[in-house]
Each structure stands twice: as C-alpha cells, then as structure tokens.
Amino acid sequence: MGTPEFPEWLVPMAATLTAERFTGEEWVFERKLDGIRLLAYKQGADVRLWSRNRLPQDGAYPAVVEAVRALPYESLILDGEATGVWGRAGRTAYHVFDVLWLDGDVTGLPYMERSALLDSLPMRAPMERVERVTDAEPWVRACREGWEGVIAKRRESPYEHRRSKHWLKMKCEASQEFVAGGYTDPQGKRVGLGALLVGYYDQEEFVFAGKVGTGFDTKLLLDLRERFNALAIASSPFTRATGLPRLRAHWVRPEIVVQVAFIEWTVHGKLRHSRLLGVRTDKAPHEVIRASP
Image (cartoon, rainbow, N blue to C red; front, side):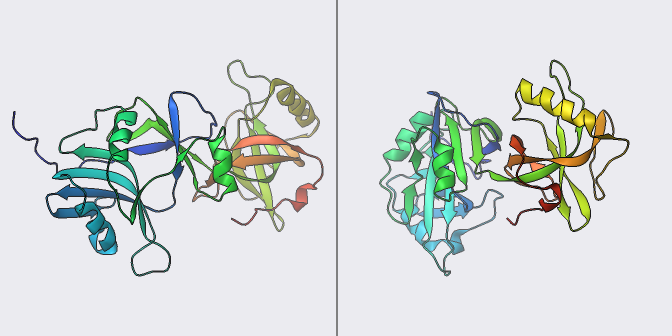
C-alpha cells in the first residue's frame, strides 16, 4: 500500500446546540471559545490556514503558520479556534481541539484516541490545547467565568464531516421576565397546556417573543391552566406579533409574569431554546421589557 493522498479539504465537524444540561461517563467537556474556527493543513513546509467556510486565513495568523510548520510531522490537519487577530489589540492564540490527519487519516478513531494523539504534539505558542473542563456542572463554571459555553463530546465518537449530535454545545443562558399572553393545547400525554406564548412591553406595544414549552412539572401545568381559565379572552392580546400559532392557541389577559431562561434571541426577535424557571409574583406585567443583551 502506498502513502495515503493528502486531502485538499475535509469538511469540519460541527456541534449541535442543546438546551439540555447533563454529564456522564461517556462524555467529556471542553471550553467553548468565541473566536474563529481555524483548520490548519501542513504538508511538508507548506502550511495553509482555512476558516470553516474554506476562506484562507494564513495572512491573519502568521505566528500560527510558523508554529504549525514546526511540528515534527510531514503531513497533518488540525482543528481548533483562533482568538485575537494579528495586528489588533489582544493576544493571538490557536486553541486546538482535534486532529484529522497525522501522516494519515485519523478521523475514524474514537475521540479519546484522537485526543491522546493531540496531547503528544509538541505545541508552541501561540498554539495551545483547548481547556478540558472537569467540574461537576461544567456549564455553571462557563457562565460564572464569562465563557461562551462548553462543548460536550462523546468519548467514542469518530470525527464526522457534518453537524453531529456527538458534539453538543451548551451556551450560557440568558434569563429575564416575560408576560404570558396565551398558551397552546397539550399534545399526547401532556396535561394542562402545551407551551406558553409570552411577550414583553415596548412602550404601549405588547410584543410576542415566542413559545416556552419546557421547564414545567405536572402540578405547575395544571395550576397555570386553572389560572388561565379565569383569564381567558377571545382574541390575542399581542399588538406586535409575527409567528403566532394559528391552531390550538388560546388567549389570556396578560397578567401572569414568568421567569424564562433561553440561549439567545433569533434575528427575528424570538427566543431560542427557552425553558421556564418559574412564576414571578414580584413584578407588574407592564414593567416587563426586553432586557439589553
């Protein structure tokens, strides 16, 4: 068998966003950095840096090019995140979290074997290994220390050239109050209600912010449905709304304030990956506005 042909491009693996919070022996956690995805290709003395969309980055990170060139392998492909940009304020670093090629294709190896290969590489600044997080609740540390979040990676997973559920990204959650303006019918074995339809006030406008369908226990579902029955109205109270459900929706006077955790706002002004934290009794509905990012 001959020497394997060095690839011109391998599609990078992408993580799937999740609102779940979990740990387990089959998972390891790494710090999620807010930078630029950077793929490093080395073939002899030739080093090329690419973004995840295959845009050249060599000129932006010359120190990374030299550090990759110094590695004692004829051919390799590394995957990581770059922080800082050459010529601007702040320290430039290349945080490496995976290896795809090491004088041959290693994407089929389990993550932990690839990780061991990565640990053996004699990296020099500005290259460094991405930080492994071993806290009992890694996402809590991430948010406490101002990180973007953490990535959960399945120990036995290969490197897949697509968005995969073997890598799950847990972003730090935002939290604020919203006002319930309606709800949807429960489906399947669910009782009480399906999801809350919530909003906030922008001066005199009541703005629809989306659905909240998780974070309930059975008692709260039934308690809220009983309260909503007493607040029922014939039409939507939202005065500015896009994306309201057209089927199985019920409207209520906007009097119940709830606390909601969510990952982020969408470009359309809706909550992404929201979950109920509880009902607030200490704030009047008209005091609820959209919090600043």
